[in-house]
Each structure stands twice: as structure tokens, then as C-alpha cells.
Amino acid sequence: MVLVHETPASRLSGRIVETESYGGEEDPGSHAFRGRTRRNAVMFGPPGHAYVYRSYGIHACLNAVTDDTDTAGAVLIRALEPLDGIAVMEGNRGGRGLSELCNGPGKLCAALSIGLELNGTDLTASPLWIERGEPAGNVMRTGRIGLSHGADLQLRFAVADSSHISRKRPQVTQ
DNA sequence: GCAAAGATCCAG
DNA sequence: TGGATCTTTGCT
Image (cartoon, rainbow, N blue to C red; front, side, top):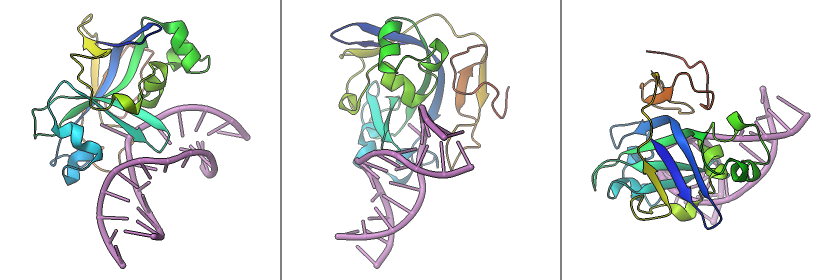
């Protein structure tokens, strides 16, 4: 799968190499765990929309809403392998190495100029969308990262041989 | 109204 | 290893 953000200046895209999935009230690690709130309202909306939230007051993180209306569920995009607009991404990220451009949820949003103004946008009718790319290679399944609850659930998926994922040797491999 | 924690990142 | 930095949330 390939994430594309078409900006007025350039086309920015990258192959999705790492994701985590989040559920609803049954998932203690999800923003939707305690029900619908102002921030996570998009997760309860129709699928195919972008859920962008602010993390630690500084970073933006991008999710794709997956479950049907009134059922919370989303996939967090955690890392990309840069494809189009690499020079622009390096500029957005302050001139980092290629493997440092998008190897984290906050980083890839900075690189692709994805901000909170894109929260709730329809991924099928906006400058931001996801399209089918080459099939992923060796996909490993591990525990989710950075959570204080539900981190033991094996809901993180990453391409094992990619050099663009956030962590090389995770806790558990399949 | 106030306090605390958070799906992170970077520098030292 | 800890600081930056600020919004959302829940409790008083």
C-alpha cells in the first residue's frame, strides 16, 4: 500500500511499511476505549477517512478509519519508505538521512506535510489518499509501541526487511 | 477551573 | 535519560 499526499507544490508519497491497529471500547490502548469524545469522534465516523491527532502536544499522527459508522476502529500509519518528493521531505524534516525521514508516526506526518487540518477528511476525495502498491514482503507481527495499556496485544505489523521502520528488533516476531 | 497523562521526538 | 510542549480528559 502506498500513501500519497498531493500538495500544491509537489506529490509526496511513500510505501507503508509499518502499521498498528486500534479498536474501540474493547481495546484498552485505543483512544476510543472510554467511548466517543470530541477528539476521537472521527474514529466513530464512516470508514475511509483520516483521523489525525496531536501527540504529546507537538506531533501529528495519521490514522485511517477502518470500521463502519458508530464502530470505532482505525489503523495508525507508523512508517513509510519514501517514494515521490524525497527532496521535499528532506526539507520538511531538516535534512535527515533517507531512513530517518518517515520511520515514526510523527516523522512521516512532518515529512508529508500532514497536519491536524486534515483530520476527518475523506481519503477517497481529497489530496490525501492510499493506493494499492506492491505486495509487502516479510511481514512481522509484534506488540504495539508506546502504550501504557494493551501493549501486549500483537497488533503492530511491519515489513521485516525494511530499513524504514521505527524499530529494527521488536519484542516478538512471528 | 485545575491537574495529569499522552499511539513522540530529539538532544545531551 | 530527560525535556519540550499543549491538548484532551476527568475530577473538584
